[in-house]
Image (cartoon, rainbow, N blue to C red; front, side):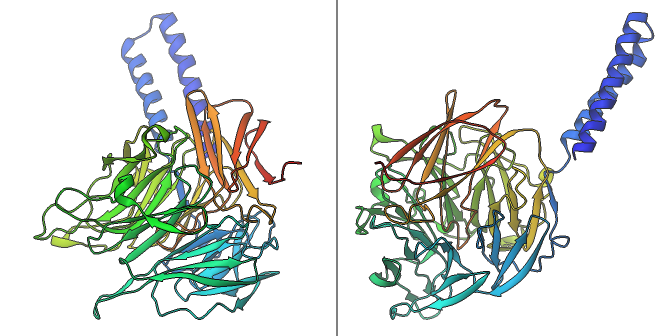
Length: 502
């Protein structure tokens, strides 16, 4: 792509030199118009170069369309991949090889030994990372029967170890609502079942400290026109359901809830507050105009961190939207949304395909799927972002394909956070980083589970647009500590480890 851009620039420079000579010589104005048209066409062709190219085959991946987890399992600085029942090692961004068999998982370092472990939410099994890409099962307490479609990690009781929130789904034929379960980490040695309760039929589970009180709360996306739930954490893993209180049920008039499969947290308007995108099915049937997918804006401390329902904000209607994931693919500083579908063909023969929505800022998005080169993907629950080749541009995994991002030329910074393993969990799940440039406050958080059973790379990616020069970082650690780092050069990957104040 760089070569094509360079050629286009040379062409334009040459044409403009000719244009100036023609004007000075007062030649035929019609010829001048032709040359100007050529300039415009050359510029347009360059602008339409797709952002993504399919590199699945050349990287050696042979995967299905199930949920995926990006995670650096061997601490070599290259993010690996857990998908399709296996672990795929990343060989310096050039190729992947399958090195282990582990069910679809979400990842965090549960015993704070410096190696990230895997929890399979489908099998409800924990796998210890033994090093050198080998994994062994960990004995969990006997768990009541349940079926899950997703889980997330987080230090819910503030003891420095990552706990688990496991969603409970359904058996539709038998009329069973399976219980969600909270597993509390006992200092990296075992887990105890703190809560098992059948409430609603969960699909996606994702955590965030949206109210900036130093503990992780959990948002659960529920199916069957049931309301979504916000489990508010008191800091000691005692959760209170508070979706109505904060305005995040994600429904519309006449309905108790939506058909939600997945949701995603993100600061969509760059005000330093983490907002929420709730993804809803919307069947065409006799039940009326069902709730569409919607953006929910965090109003901050002045409004007690309540949310304002902004509606679709440009997300066009499809019946079978599934799991969303967010990432700034074009490095302009705005978090974009990739959104999958369940059905290839929905009601009345309508085609449904995964969609990439570009965030234009201030909660307005535009469909750029075709222009970006990711059109026509099959139905899938797979949606996860990572910079797998460390070039500063977020790559996308979806529909059983790996798409390499070819965009260049904008500022970026990637940050890896580590806890001390004592007061901050080693994976730093729940930590947030802010970068202020002018009136914009770019905020990212370390997550371990999003959408429906997927996980983006825990390395925090910041697109910074046209910014030049270093930036300052404010790190909010999950133990309520704050750290400021000044004059950080962009265009690199940096790492910070929590160090307690002396």
